[in-house]
Length: 424
Image (cartoon, rainbow, N blue to C red; front, side):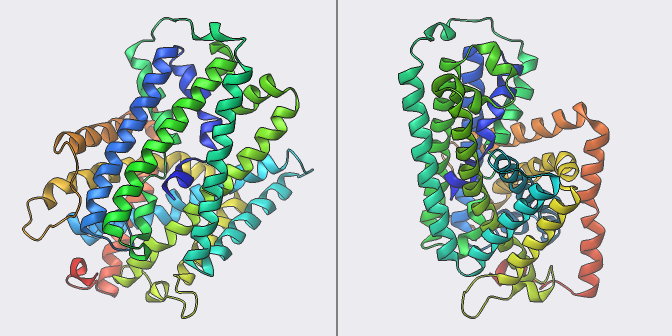
């Protein structure tokens, strides 16, 4: 699930963004390696917290336990209205746009295909977590085999272009920030496996191993794919490309390469979307069980043993975002706020370690340096976004903060259990 969720469509697009900011062979690899290390640091933090709180809800549970139910509610609020549902909608649209490579789809047809994919994957996860995980596993294995094939074919057929690895001038330090943010965006979703901890066998052992090994596998794939791109195409062409994977495939295989890559992106997108569709409803389910959402969202289907109502609600809202086209604006404004919560999650680790009842099975290697570096990096991403686009950033932050008075109004209407931490 970790590999399948992270390894989506972004790696077939984002390398051009990174290379345009850092037009240097050494700089490109430095950015991707650093993004992988920072993602690993976040995964290590999540691994310890998941081993201490192996409950359905993941980041929501960590924030609720370290700070207060209110902060956990804000995370779930932002997830449902924009961050998570918006990502579901956006990835569904990516799949549909690539499907238009093979089918004559207009704007309405693309939206219809995106909604159909979202509803179809939601239906699979509706009927059982086993079915959803089997589908996720199949997509992940397929994607890894395809990536391995691209790497092997790329280096086998691209040997005529070794001059692309000649040394180049190093970019200025200021250019590394935007490049690193673009790289980290490609690693998005690493934390989502923690959402389903309550349905995972031996979660205190399984979740940490999944986070660590999954992140390492994805980092290796990303570095290798970028090596292929830079081996097959000149550096300036990689930087200019708007469909780097397809351009590399065309260079290797001729005009049929684009069709091959379009099919691979569709397959990869389905795999990533499957994991995202599976994970999100677990947060809303956990919040409902804590009394922070309508109680009916916290029910489990008597036959399928899944949070079917939460799955259905996510599918409906994501489909609405697709139909109205509002998902793109929401994501542009709000997605950076995710890193505020990640910084808070890592800061919560310092607080939790001071409690006598805190007993994780796994502890972060390199504490306190690892979580401290992750906190600084997360806040750096937030500050960079705010300075770069203060108006849009303020709008996104306002949307998240609206959840604060909503939470307190909800508490007055329907009080949260006095000891939410112990309720699980």
